Amino acid sequence: MKKLLLLLVVVFAVNNTIKSQSYFGYTFDNYSGIHGLTLNPANVVDSPFKTDINIISGSLFAGSDYLGVNIQDIIKSEGGFDFDLDAQKSAKNDNNFFLNMDVLLPSFMFNLSKKSSLGITTRLRAFLNVHNINGQLYESLADEFDDTEDFEFNLKDFKGTVHVFGEIGLTYGRILMNNEKHLLKGGFTLKYLQGAGGAFFNAPSITGFYDASANTLTTSGNLNYGLSSEEFDSEDIDITRIITAGFGADIGFVYQWNDKNKNKTDDSTIKRYTKYKLKIGASITDIGSINYKEGKKTTYDLNNTIDVDDFDDENNDKSFEEILDDNYSSVTTLGSNRIKLPTALNLLIDYNITGKLFTSFASSMSLSNTATTNSIINTVTIAPRLEISWLSIYSPISFRQYGDVAWGAGLRLGPLTVGSGSVLTNLLSSNSKSADIYFGLKIPIYRKFDKKVV
Image (cartoon, rainbow, N blue to C red; front, side):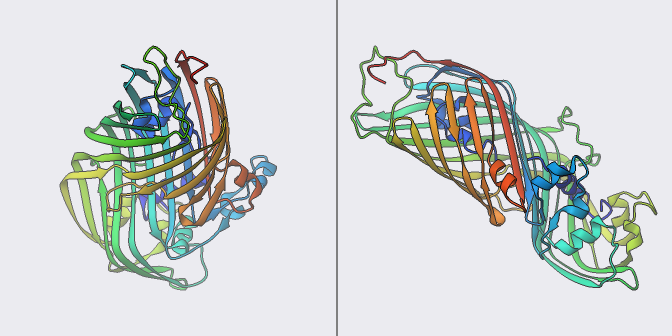
């Protein structure tokens, strides 16, 4: 399979080890602290914390609309589950694969004054997207064309990107307005990006026909294939080797409405955070890109008929590029390859039902749609939760792009957070197409407060 498209190997490996956007449900919590900055930088100010220190946190989200699994079958198999044979496959002409890994390294936030706060974050992130791959072609590549039937395919806007990078973020937030019933705060994050490398491919149109009797593949169209550097290998990414740097930014605002005239307090009183009946937040995250100046881009003319034995690992050990170079004419240029960040629009409506009970309505929508960019999976989430200072319990239900519905659960208990936006669905469904899991360990230092006011 790696002989046709290098990036698809990564995708297939992800789905063969599918364990699990980031921190589903947790970032809506008023006590999410430093994690809330990843959703909206305005969350840094008017928080319940004097200081919030993240030690280590991680989130992994992966899936596709091609491969579905029954988690119960995996559990019962005791390690004997075979994804090739046991997984349910939904082959279409435009299947999609995706991966989002987010590791929050040592980070912290603190208050500068009653109206402003500062946060510093360090993160390691990896994204993979493959869009509009023909499912039957994908399966034939995975099986090295062990197929007895002819088939044809027509790919439109076929593209994919894999990108690994680190970031150091500086967040500033400030209360912009505060009266008896209304509070408005804003924030921004400036990011210094460190690119570890990436690869991308795209093709406006590729048509093809597999002749089973002749064991040949006839294709037509053009394929653009780019690398962050000539030596980049997506199967052996070295996250400690920084190739180049870049810059990015997040910006966000939060409006809160309180129906009980409790926003304004005496200056001598410090509240944990301003109570509200309704909170509305909006942010744009991951604005920016990384420009790999020593990149490589090759355009292949796919108008040819080739022997599919070239894709058989047992017959040869040719690399992906060697097979393309042996069978198709190409033009290679050296120069800058710019990979854009997965820019997204995030909206949040958080309603205080009563006392410690809340429910959130949130959406994250991708604003990235170019050939050399990663993108998040468009998601709408409803997340009820019980929230107090040292404990939160929440159960998000997400409607995800490509038709997947996910139901999960999460727990924040003091310094420890664990959860998944899809664990309940995966346990109950016989055909799960996405999975995610996250954890976090931090040191929360709460603000002092006056119980009469709070």
